[in-house]
Length: 115
Image (cartoon, rainbow, N blue to C red; front, side, top):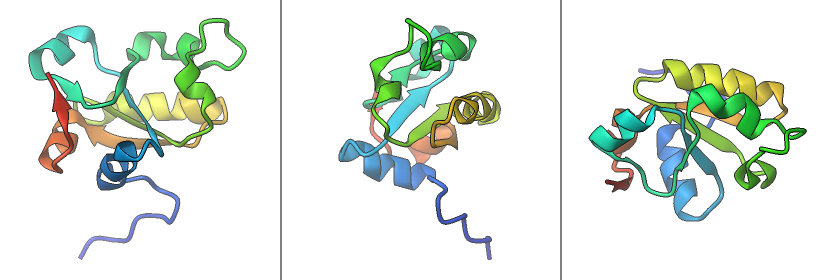
């Protein structure tokens, strides 16, 4: 038996369901070469980890509108490691951010993929 997720945690299944109703922002922090090789989650926004600090900082003129929505942010990468770093950075800016693992987790859970 697996332990229950904390009440406010967004799982990959939650992210898939909420992305269909536009209740969550899904962010792909992988490099473009990884996306070209495998595709990305349908509706996800590509923000490479290297540019996340600038693109998500509310005081930056480069801050993307998706981060201004007030919606929870679900982040994935290839396996979950970079997504964890991204979530820490996003939480530091005050976002309700969640690591949903890797792209494979999204695809295996039935999430739609854009190639």
